Image (cartoon, rainbow, N blue to C red; front, side):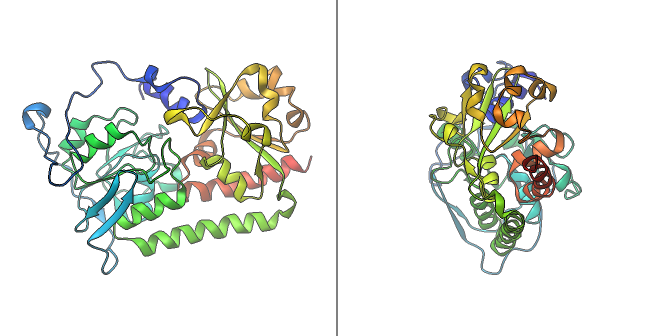
Amino acid sequence: MKRSVRLCLGLLLATSLPLAGCSPSDEEASDSAATSQSPASREAPDPTETNLEADDAAPTETADADSGAYPAVVETKFGPVAIESAPQRVVALGWGDAETALELGVQPIGASDWLGFGGDGVGPWSQGLYTTPPQIIDTLEPSFEEIAALNPDLILDVRSSGDEERYRRLAAIAPTVGVPEGGDAYLTSSDEQVRMIAAALGRAEAGEAMIAELDAAFLAAAEAHPEWTGKTATAATRTSESWGADVEGSDRVTFLERLGFVQSPSIAALKPNEGALGFAVDISAEQLDLFDADLIVAFPIWIETTEITEDPQWLAIPAVDAGHTVVIDGDLSNAYSVATVPGTLYAIDHIVPLVADALAQ
C-alpha cells in the first residue's frame, strides 16, 4: 500500500491531520469526469476520456435473491436508489462493504482493501469466500477510470465519507448505494450497512439473520459479565502523528457499549473532529489523562505496539497504572475496526476474555 494512502487510513482510524494533506500524488489521481445520479442524466463515462475498455472480470457470483426482491429501492443520504434486477457485476468500495457482500453470498468483482489485508482484501474471518479474486480499488482516492472499466451494474459505498463529489462520480458509472442519512464520516452503523447492502443484493432475509447472530453474540457476552454494566470505557488509538479517541456513534465505541460499558464522560465532552474524521477526537500527548476510565481499549496504527505500552505519559494514566487496559494489534485490532458482522464476531470471541482479565486486576 502506498505510503500516502497508508497515512490517510491511519488518520481515518486515529484522526490527526486533515484529509487534504493525504491525497496521492498527481500521477496517482484520477482525471475522469462524471455527471449526476439522476437516471435521466446519468451517462456512461466517455471512452475518449477514460481510454479504457470494459474489464474481462467474470460476473459477480451470487446466491439466489429472495423472492420478490426486485425491483428494489434503497434509501440513502443522496436520495432513493432504484435497482431493477439482481446485479451481476458488483463493485464494493465502502469500509467493510465487500466483507458484508461476501457474507450475503455475493462476490464483488472489484473491492477496496481499507485495512491493508492484501490478497482478496478481506480479513481472515472472510478468507476463502471468493472463488475469483476481486480487482483491488484504492480507498480514499479511487480511480474512477478503473472502476468504469469493470463495467459494474451496482456500486456499494455504504460506509464511506459521504462526500457528495465522490458519490456523484460513482453514480455516473453505475447505480450507487451511498451512505445513509447521518452516515457521513464513516458513521454508518453495522446494522445499517447490512440492511442496505442486503436490500440492494436481494438478500434481506440473510441480512436479518446476520444481524440476529451478532445481536445474540453481544447479548451472551454482556449477560456473562453483568458487572460491566455502566462502567466507563475509552476507545483509544495512536499513530506516528498523534493520539485519538473515538466518539459516540463510532463502531468501536458501539462495540464497548454493547458489552455494557458507557462512553467515558471526559471523551464525550469533547468536540469531534470535523468532516470525514468526525468519528473521533484528537488528544494531545499532554492530555492523555482524558483517556482515563474504568477500561481503556487501545491499539497502534502502523507503529509498534510498544509505542503505546512503553510511553511514559500512557503509563501515568490511572487506569493504565491499575492494569485496566487492553492493547490489541494485528488481526484483532483489524477485527475491532472493520465492524463487519464476521469481523465483529471474531473480535467478541477474542476481546471479551482480555477485558475480563484486565478488569479482574
